[in-house]
Image (tube, rainbow, N blue to C red; front, side, top):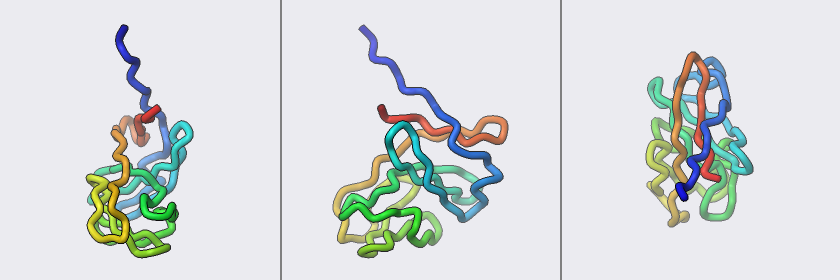
Length: 108
């Protein structure tokens, strides 16, 4: 029996997240951070893997977001930790843009 693939869900309009900006969205039961880097959209987990800080309240510089609690940095294009104290990467979500809508695939 084949495993079903989660669907993409609309989370925002491309007008909602301009270049260099980010926004927290909910996909299923997950908090997801959607980021516009040079006109391309990326999505990673919004909850810091260190101690659960809200990444959407952090600082975005280029393609790195800094957690507001303890300063961990994550690459928003890969989810990888660029600077600790976090040691675990953020989950990465598939993103599609269709007709001005940003769609993110659930991991559930």
